Length: 151
Image 1 (tube, rainbow, N blue to C red):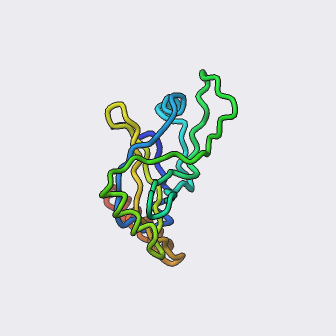
Image 2 (image 1 turned 90 degrees about the horizontal axis):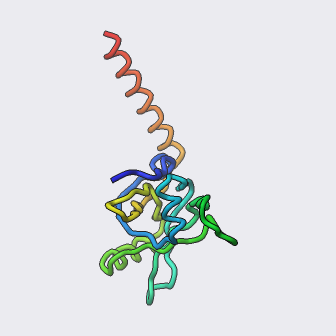
Image 3 (image 1 turned 60 degrees about the horizontal axis):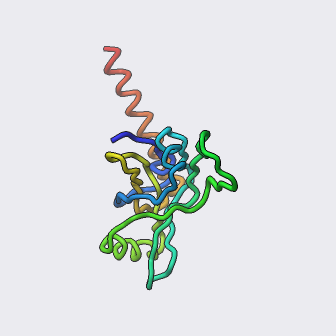
């Protein structure tokens, strides 16, 4: 398993409650570009389309740069890409997506064997004071490590 892209901002901005793994529907040049690491998950999220009757989940705002060797005209690097989930996961996520205050945030893109997988999480947005507490905690941990290594 090699990690292709990580959304570091997601852990800072959101409190991650549950994580899920899904496959992505990509074109050939997108797969090659993604495996080269030309992917950005900043501000990307998962959206529900099709309503309750025919629900489908899509990765939105993820940028996959065009593959240099492929001749791609009219390539949209921010297009929505469909996620591959089973029926139980879809049924569970439909309820979570419609619940107030929760969102689905993309956290990591990686490979399993030859497949490209997306890890996303059900998340709740943090308040400003929660973010400050996290920064203080990280600073204290860093200072503790420094003092322990200096002795």
